[in-house]
Amino acid sequence: MAFEELKAQIGMLLGEMNEQPEDLHELYHRIHQELNELRATGAALPEDLLALERRLLEEFPEAPRT
Image (cartoon, rainbow, N blue to C red; front, side):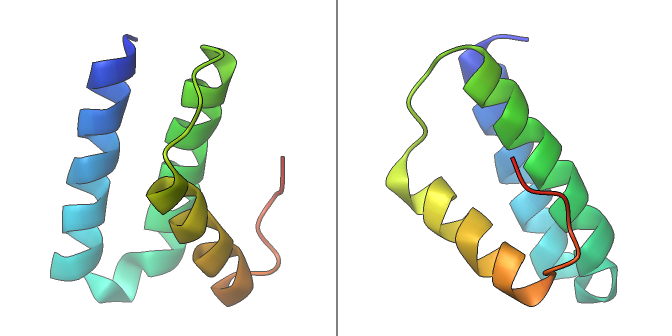
């Protein structure tokens, strides 16, 4: 998947977080997977996405870390 497509997918997941806050844990896992796909492309992740990931890791400490 292309970098821009992955960024768009993450944007959609963030929108879901706002619409369905009861599913935050599942959405976190999906966002984490998308970020890992971006990492696999060798692209530098934007600081705002890295900050989001850190905040989600604080909220869901049992989540897998990269």
